[in-house]
Image (cartoon, rainbow, N blue to C red; front, side, top):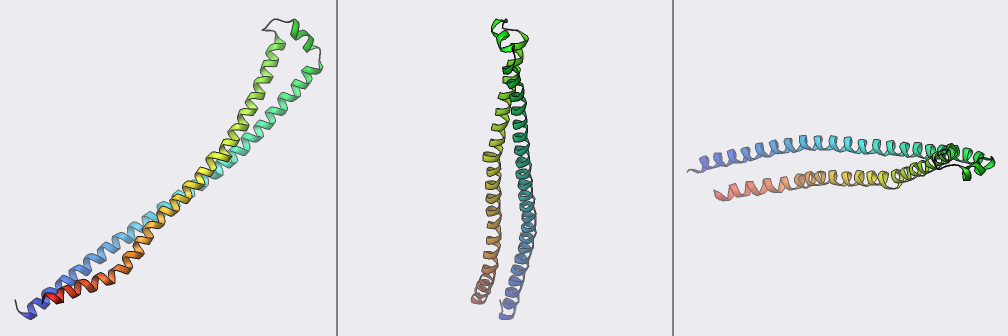
Length: 168
């Protein structure tokens, strides 16, 4: 092969290499945009979930307090009446016993809602925060890879060019 023909072939190889690199870069850029959008959507969803469970915990706590007040109000009322005396004399299924069972059930339900509120605040919400932070770190990795690729490209281009020139 003559020198001008070889030079032309080298130029074609370099041009093809540059074209392929540009196509790959365009694909990577498009994929990075999609990844960034996904990251933003996930972080927003996690933020919405945190807000939702924070509000739900607040509602559960309010509900718990209201149930507790309700039960205490009626328990105090029954303590002050003569119903206590009748309670001892009544059968197991007496209305007074049923009433006391109902009030005690409401108190248990109040404690359950307090526990649920605590679970939301101390377990679920912090986990969403952790997942959000982890997602942010994971989505930064491709950016670092893209930066690395951008710094490697000029070096690789010079290497390819020098290899082509060396073959002459």
